[in-house]
Picture 1 (spheres, rainbow, N blue to C red):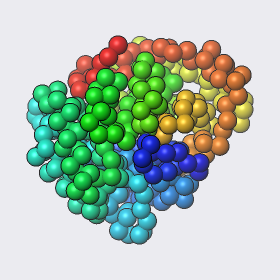
Picture 2 (picture 1 turned 45 degrees about the vertical axis):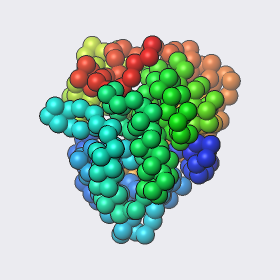
Picture 3 (picture 1 turned 60 degrees about the horizontal axis):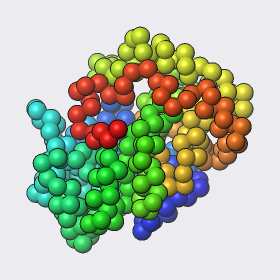
Picture 4 (picture 1 turned 90 degrees about the horizontal axis):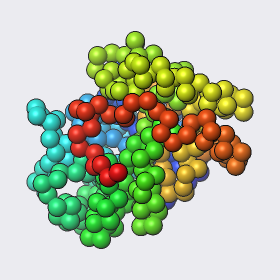
Length: 327
């Protein structure tokens, strides 16, 4: 696996990380044994970045990683998050007391005394971002975290935060069908020496080798109420992506490999974190870093899937609470 820098001051890590949200069942039933096999497969593929959160399964995802570390004596660069309070009602808390308490819980579940990266999962608008970064810088001084990150923020928030203490990474949804970060955020990260970490780079399964079937989604599946996966949008989206599937297969690539290679091509500071709960799905895209897209490939992808092609918003109204809007 090729390497990329996790921010200007961060370590070199695998160009592709593993998003561990699926270990908590957000996209279908799973179990610990399957998750542990997936972590083993990631390690064997050279993937050494694991991304999780305190609210993925209310600690379940972190606990699985902790179990994997304990049983195998293997480890990785670990990023986790805090700041979302599930409620009811769901809200955000970036206070120092809350972040410290949640971080301690995360560390206990992970079996660690520190994590390399700690994100503010959602910004609490009641607290100036400068004050939040003050808290995070103290956690760095205390040796609890190696660096801090921000999730779903505007470029202006990143610049304000970075002026107080250098930010390590910014995480936002980014893929062929979610292109908002191109309106300033990817460029701001590059200018400041901040890693940009695309989550859902495979569009929540739309760029998997087998297209998802919404009729099979469990009631708790995140996509069940997502506008892009409900009709008529889903039918339009499936039809739009079909020619891209042909494009990938004609070149001998899996669909997910081609989609992930496109994300990797958008800048050397991008470290995408596709999520999966199985070793089999991971194998579909784990070697995407080896693909070099030609100018002709890029032009054809742009023709097939132009920016803004997707039907429906990336979040429902309920899901959209928290991410900063800046365009």
